[in-house]
Length: 342
Image (cartoon, rainbow, N blue to C red; front, top):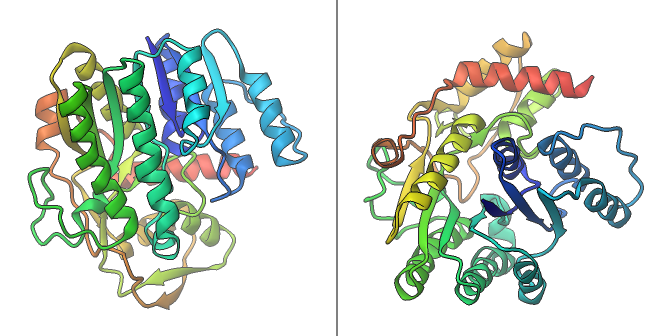
């Protein structure tokens, strides 16, 4: 099979590509190496995902990415430095490859930045996604997996969150763009018979996690004896999902799409284990053998107070079965972080 993966040099995307290549498939990776965080992180992700761990010599962004494209190209793998807002650029890629399925993970991520840059989030997460659906329509590609987010639930009072819950009350532009993607995706399924699964990810963590996200940030700061930003009273809670379990959910979704037609489904991919902010910090402290110095800050606008996934539907439909509890997941992450640092 030939899979087009958007955001394939990111955290989740690089792990997915690693799994797909290992299973003998061909992959087209589209990533725009956005300045949201250091592009060098994505270069390392890319090299790891294809099994080329090398001493990459960095110079400037454009030179480095061009060299990465050349270095990684093979019969099984192609990398494109491409923004999904550029439909003409995307069209050239679709023309050059026979694509069996699109797995769309690229997005402008982050609740707090979306409040500062809402129009840019709409351009990337809504218009960019529609560009892909338009090309799927034009090139007769009938299988599509799309990354949604647990943020669509907002401050849902009913827990755990089920796919049938009302999600008409997002509290950030990021969440609103993800809800839009689900709704517009249904339009393309209905009009053009594109089989589609929308996956609501619940706070994914693990090796290669973005350095701006809480677990990675806290592990780094605590290990360096620096204070951590601690928002609220510590009772906010998240359903943290280990990266291996997310990849298992995506690959099982791929298999389900390949074996079924007339599909439009929304699935929660979470761990179904809720961890408070205080518990998260304590678990990291234990794994590192160090105590955290906390800088107490007020709650941030757009942040939800709790997430908790009802994963019954994913278990029943695709056989999703998360296997990594939070304590073991943090232990694995800390081991990776310390190994990477030395």
